[in-house]
Each structure stands twice: as structure tokens, then as C-alpha cells.
Image 1 (cartoon, helix red, strand yellow):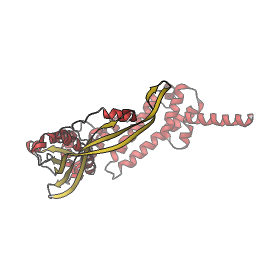
Image 2: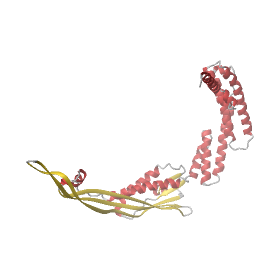
Image 3: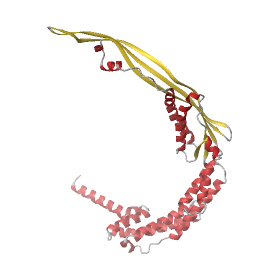
Image 4: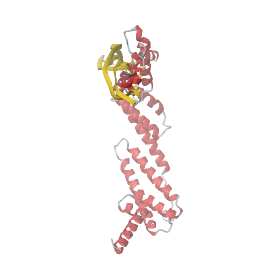
Length: 376
């Protein structure tokens, strides 16, 4: 690129940058709000900027007229949520006026920018009222899905106008009408020997359900809590161990003949004597396997329909290794020799093994519950 071309490029870039910072480009594209904001920003740092001085009054006038026209159109609309659009338009006008009021040089170009404070407050109230009425209409349909819609309307109404009369109570009513109430039975195990171990598994489930945040509109209850609170449950989760085996033991032995050459086996007057050393190496592996099968079922209490019935399997294998040898220990490598110095270890108590195989079952169960109730 020669010097003349480079100069032209930088001149074009400078014009483009100035156009952006003064709001001229935004004005030409019909984005009047952005044009006002850019022109005001430019005039704050450069009060005599000619282009910004030309842009501001024209962009401000067009922005106000556009918003007022849209407000008039919205007022005759049949859209139930039209007041939110009207509120937004008044908010934009007031924001533009605040920007001009905060720029002394801008007030010479746009004196007395209009503010629609009362109109904004009135439209905000009417927008909240419209949401409230829509919420009431949905709530009267008397089903969970409509109650969820009602809840969203009431929450929006409160965010628009927090002091709106009765809205807090309506949010509460809609929420509880929308909530799916699920009672969870304790995991059943047909063995007195493992009842204590099963309490750990049951406590894990209780902790998860108590802190469940997967779906706002699903609440879980233990049987005793549901009874105490007189909850009319929608669904029931049944959990019971169909089958389990704790402490099934397997022992494997692997025998290996070891030989190592060029080992110093003695010494004479001529020096060291090298030879071959041998050993019979036996390595043992003990596995204690525990596994179980949990049945996870969901029942609709209103129709007595089985909604989900699934088997969840879990396994835990405890392992121990040790070894022995006959012969010359020099035939063994370092790792083999270390194993020969170990002794057989007793496996954990059966109750601990039961807890261990329920851990992968718990992880899968949580995934199944989360997935199943995400649709509600």
C-alpha cells in the first residue's frame, strides 16, 4: 500500500469512527435511541463537536415521536400484555431525557426534554394488573399446567409492581396448585442383618431429595412427613432390593517358575563366581464380591398407574494381593519380593460391603429421578 492509499484509508477510517461516536450512522439506520446516546456521549467529552450537535436534536425528536407513536398503536391493540410494551416505551423516553439532562451542552440543543413519570407509573401498574388477571384466569382452569402458567404471570406481576394487592398470596396459591407432590417410601430390604447398613443408603436418598433443585414444581416427602402435613400426594416412589449378595469370595493362585542368570553365587581366589538362581513364586489374589438389584418404581396415586419400573444394579469388588516363594529370593524382582512380605488381609465386615455396593446404585438412582422429574 503506497503512502497516498494509506492516507485515504486512514481518512476513511477516521470518518467512520467519528460517524459512529457522534451517532450519525445510527441516525441514518433509524436507530434513534442509539443515535441520541452516542451524540450525548460525544458532547460530554467534546461540547462543540459540530456533527454531534447536528445529530442530537434531530435524533432526539425522532426517537420521542417514534416511541409516542408506538404507544398510541399499543393502546388500541387487543394484546393482553400491551401495557408492558407501553411501559417500556415510556421508560425509554424518560431514559433519553435523563441522558440529555445530565449533559449541560446538550440542554442548549434540546431544552426541556419531556419526562413521562406519571404515565410510566400508570402503565407499570396496568401491566402488573394485566398479568394478575391472566394469572387468575389460568388458575381457574384447575390443572397443574395452567397453575404453572398462572404462577409465572403472578411472579411477573410482582416484579412489575411489588406492592400490587394480593399478588404474594396468589403466587403461593398458584405454586402449590402447580407442585407435583411425591411421597418416597423407605428402601425395603428383606434382611434383619443388613438393616443398619441400609440406613446409610436411605439417608443418602433423604439428603438428596431434601436438597433437590432439579424442578421447582416437584416436591418430595418422606412418608411420615407427608402424613404429618396431611399432604395429598400425586405420586409414590417405591424402592426395594430385589436381590443382593454380600461377601462372595474368590481366591486365585498363579504359580511361576523364576530363573535369573549371572547372579553372584560365590567367590574363590580368582574372583566372583556367577551362576543361575531359581525360585517357585506363588501369587494370590482374593476377591470379595458384593452386588445387588434395586427396583425403582413410580406410581400415579390418582390413577394407580405404574409410570416407571426399573431395575438398578450395583457391584463392589474388594481385592487383596499377597505372595510366597520357595527357593532363592534373588530370582524375584523388587515388586514380587514386596508381595511376599505381605500377609493375607481380612476383608471388610459384611455391613461395610453392603454400603459399598449401594453407592453406584445411589448414583444411578439420582440420575433416574432427576431425568424422570425434569418433564414435570
